[in-house]
Length: 234
Image (cartoon, rainbow, N blue to C red; front, side):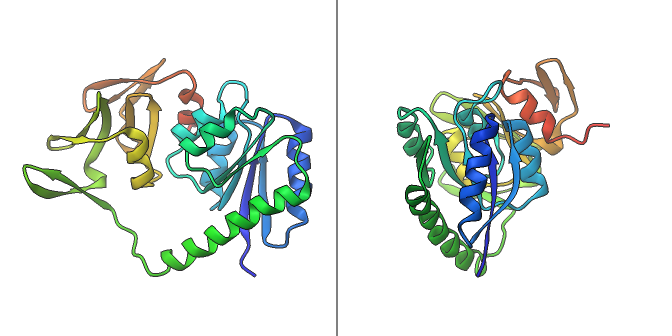
């Protein structure tokens, strides 16, 4: 049986442990790591090819929503929280399911069964789909090919996005959230509500901003620890 590799992200030790025990009762789940904050989870995503994250919504420094906004690539997500009002945000972020603390095994099993069916479907699809390292944007009535390696950053400008490359800028209609869902490339990360950057193009970081191609780009408070977790700091 193909197993789903899982991360558990919750600042509460007892909540992490209770989820781990529930996972151990399901033969198709394998827990890679227990994380107590979003920064730890970002590092874990680099270490493990996780298929499912159980994500707490209320964590100090970096909330679950802020983690979702910043993570370059995300597997399936199941929210795990004590607040029912977060269920509405679950729909906004197209997560697999929403579990309210405390949960029971039947409800937990229903959520992970749903995740497993989607996992198997994606596995079949990925086996027949080649990885692509380019995007196409519509400009002047034509579809223009852009190599993702040439992209410096994406900047939100009202209802549009400025796609800044090493050669020129392109303006497309859309949102950064929608963009991140389509690209799913770990080298791109949202560091501010208005910017998604190519991590490989950073020239330097100072306080709460960084430099890419002479452009000073702000880093939000919540996103800074997540950004630092993606860098090879010596």
